[in-house]
Length: 166
Image 1: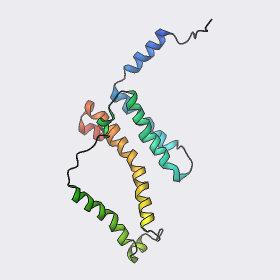
Image 2: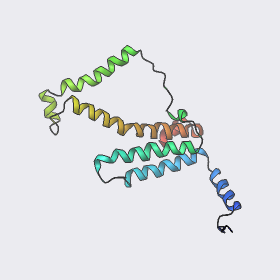
Image 3: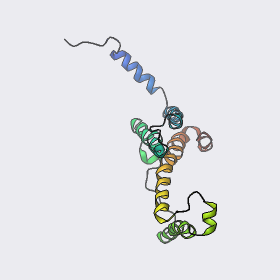
Image 4: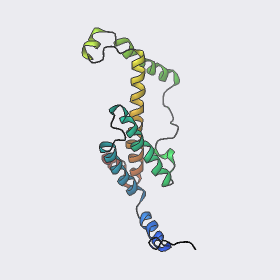
């Protein structure tokens, strides 16, 4: 004989599902975003400041993507689609080269070292690591604010209000 749970019945489960489905997609996104920002600020996954990026990835990227999957939303609608790049490949490579070379060329200068006195040993290896860490930190934030919040809310409240909310 199978023991039955007298607290969870089919009717109570249906009631919970109806209550959950009463929230609109936008309401779920807004409530989840508020909770995730609070968690990311006050409940870090590691006390080590060097691992703050782990909390950012979990709270601002992995959990929101999971919420979108649970809502049955296509992820491409939230910024994960292949973009149409407006510039030629030649201009793109030239601009990227300048962005990488400028700090590498200016870091040995005495003016640079005086201004950034706390890290005078910045070289190409440190510069590459800093660029990688910045990308690892800001990618989840960009998705969270521009993808999850902005694209999640703009259908309901419009572009201007979605910008204000995010």
